[in-house]
Amino acid sequence: MVPDLRKIFNRFRAEGSFLEGKAFGPGHIHDTYRIVTAEKECDDYLLQRLNSNVFRDIPSLQENMERVTAHLRMKLAAIEGSNVKRECLTLVPDRETGKSFITDDEGRYWRMFLFIPDHRSYERVDSRHKAFEGGRIIGKFQALLADLPGKPLHETIPDFHNIARRLDTFHSVIEKDPAGRVASVRDEIEEINSRENEMKTILRLGAEGRIPLRITHNDTKFNNILFDCNDRALLLIDLDTVMPGYVHYDFGDAIRTATNRAEEDAADLYSVSMDIEIYKAYAEGFLSETRNTLNATEIEHLPFAPKLLTYIMATRFLTDYIDGDHYYKIKYPLHNLQRARVQLTLLRDMEAQYSNMVQIINNIVK
Ligand code: ADP
Ligand code: GN1
Ligand code: MG
Image 1 (cartoon, rainbow, N blue to C red):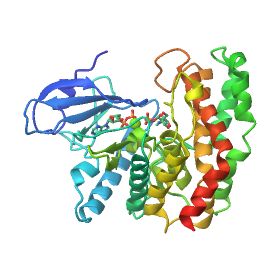
Image 2: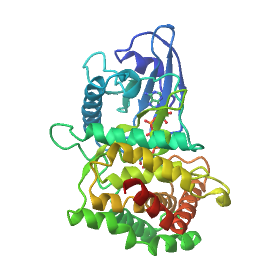
Image 3: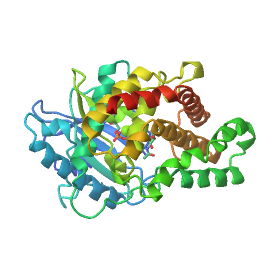
Image 4: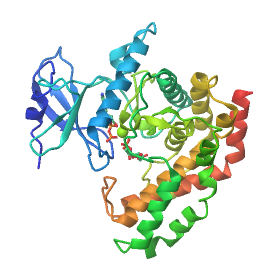
């Protein structure tokens, strides 16, 4: 059913009146709308119907979101020259209860942010400058949240980047083969299986206490960074998965998406490869903010992180394809399979360029 955006909008404590609402952005998870207000002097808004199949406990998720944005605002306000309204998401409260989300007549959850105007976001990265800026803003995000007070954040999706759990799910979906697709993807399954042990490295280091859990974003896909018109990175959005994690998850997912010369669902697999210059610039930006807080084992494994995150996404896309496409939004029947193939192609290219990836990090930190 088409939602009544005006009615939903009016339940939030917004300034300005509803002029129009239209679908907005490339996200795979929520339904996102830009609400344009009638008054020129009033902000526009970003309204989201949240995906409660993916996020099972929305009140806990919103509690994380409130704590994280409040802390970021406080820290940014103390930094000279910062513009808090453009460098941090602003949640708009429910008119009646003051909560940061509402439920509609069908029990669906909604939240609303101030719309950050005149921003740019990129699916692909075509300059070293943008890559450095992306690295810098993700590093800054981790640095600003390092002293978040209080209890640990809720795990909004349990075991989100736990590759051992992801592989368990992968194998049980293959076993069930609910959509009858397993026979057609034997080669892709074999590519996943052959790397299983290597890909558990970060989990092992965590279990041995050699790398700490930090507060990480966990979805540092490049299009979750908003830039200003001069391509200076403003902020990291999509804070639903901010929770305890290893630094490698954020470093790896950003490299996975920023360095790929093709899109995540590119039709032509020959166009997929990793741009090592973008990797270098991103790593320089990221380490300019985090260098002094990371331990030697964390740094040593940074080059491995992009391989891991690319492998995790390949596993997840392939799992969803075999399962019959229940998780990610798809635009055509083989969409998830194509996404998995792109990730596997990218992974092979990262493997081919691995010694350079190691050398680049060594040069930055020496
Ligand atoms: P999803 O989890 O579905 O990816 P996001 O939170 O990333 O949802 O939002 C989807 C898109 O909406 C983003 O890619 C971005 O283009 C846009 N967006 C999100 N928040 C804002 C905001 N406060 N101002 C402007 N655009 C935004
Ligand atoms: C989803 O929400 P979005 O589109 O930024 C997914 C990420 C994947 C990404 C792949 C909560 O991110 O984990 O990396 O798609 N988010 C969730 O494009 O599953
Ligand atoms: Mg997003």
